[in-house]
Image (cartoon, rainbow, N blue to C red):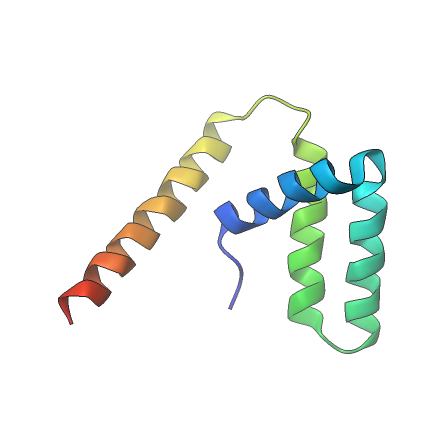
Amino acid sequence: MAAPDLDIHRTAYLFVRLHGDAAAGRARMIAERMRRKGDNDGADTWLRIIVAIGELGEPPTRRGIELIITSLSARCRSLRSAQRT
């Protein structure tokens, strides 16, 4: 299962805070290591994080904001549904 967009962006933000300008390179090394071990889903997640790292310096687009809102809305619905059961 793919990681939610919000989790990807949170991880990218924290990774940049932790590693600064080296964040994308370190994330790329993690993605390559996962791919070599056969964890393609994990590698794909880290590739999404690399893209998000690249987007951090750019102002958010309307589409990006819509994706985050959609992701949050789906998560809220899921939590409400779980509480009812």
